[in-house]
Amino acid sequence: MDPKWNADQPIYRQLRDRVVAMILEGVLSDGDALPSVRNVAAEYRLNPLTVLKGYQELVDEGLVEKKRGRGMFVNEGARKQLLTDERKRFIEIEWPAVLETISRLDLDLKELPQATGQTGNAGAQDD
Image 1 (cartoon, one colour):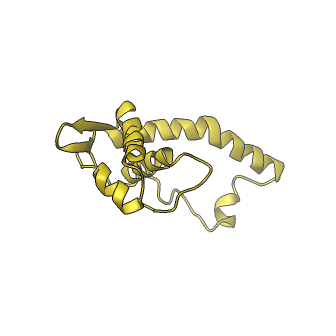
Image 2: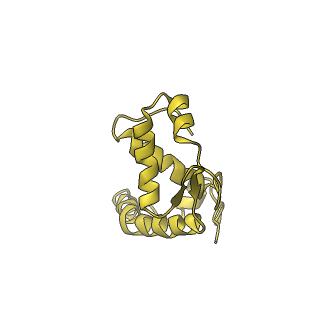
Image 3: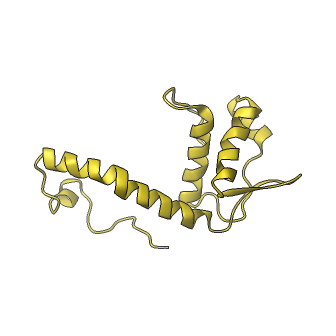
């Protein structure tokens, strides 16, 4: 996890988002333990309650489960759930804004991959 915090968003939310990114990127897989609240708090000089609040959001979303006395673990299917949710959010919220910018700048969608040095579906994954 990156120790830099952004002032625009609460730290517990940024912590939650970093764990989500780790799950999406495959750094954390189904059944993996999250770093302990104490370790994260000590390593990043955070209040343990802040870390706990970020982790609790993950529990509330069904991505992580608490195992009493053992810690918190990534739930089975968490990555798949996140991919579904993030794809939906991207298509409904971010993509319309991207299309609006493309239109406003009078860009040609067919030419964008060549203009950015991208070809085909580089990096695309199906689960």
